[in-house]
Length: 104
Image 1 (cartoon, rainbow, N blue to C red):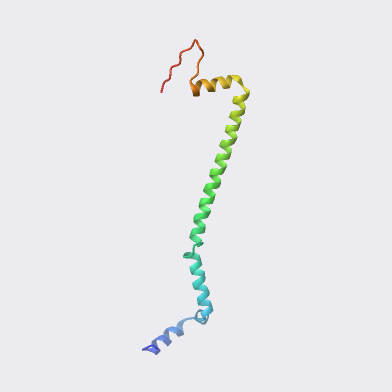
Image 2: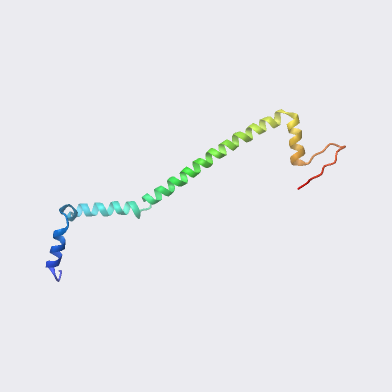
């Protein structure tokens, strides 16, 4: 099988006995494969964890914005002066004796 069995015997003699075991070798190869090459590898898990934390931060931000908008809506629809101010600013409505100047 090998041309120089003496050289292979010398190399195999230096390897520790547990590493020569085929079950250990197969297990190590399997673990290495799962850690780096599989679809659910550690690298992919770190990326997913990073994405998850970003999405959770965005969720907290948008929940805060929703609360602020709901509070603004409540104030807007309960107070007539704020409603008038809103309509004047956003829809440029005016009273009959007023002139509106839009400056950009």
